[in-house]
Image (cartoon, rainbow, N blue to C red; front, side):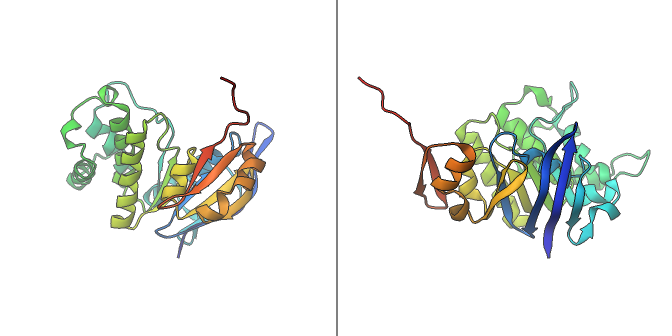
Length: 261
């Protein structure tokens, strides 16, 4: 079964068409990276899939049309990690992660013992248990990114949407977060749909890639099929060299002219 099927997705914001007939399929257990130049519609696509934006077209999650899912039902199937999540001032790490259990809490009710256990299990899995009572704002960038991921994982949703999950992280923390996601994907059978800015990192982790340009799908396929010098020159206006790596193609920028001594 496919985790996600989107057909003819169209999103218009403020009179401007951001997505114009996008088709996207993600198989259960697959990691698909959405790439493209700035303004291509990558984040908009994730927000449409996650139900955060109204969209025309057809979107189904694990075989059920999103139009037939309540907000609570959708939250049990899809968890999202935004680029810059809003964190209430003074909130402790455990309390923030417990927000991921909201789809299971009855109206006017409180988190159950099972909800608390689920949150603590995720904190332990992500090596965050020692920060449970710390204010989220006091953590490092890499630690905060793991907390954002922990909240999404606490939802128990099988489809994980990551919007630029390594933004503002140094290379060590980038690898830490992405290795963690990849390990959890394999251990838990998660499906991952992620927008990614760094093309080499995207090629290392993704099973498939979708290149968006101008709100449309310009290319899709394996990283080796999408990360070509020709496609990147056409849609990014970039001069690059694509080198074969151990797990996928590596994209290296090439200077247009050599400076004199």
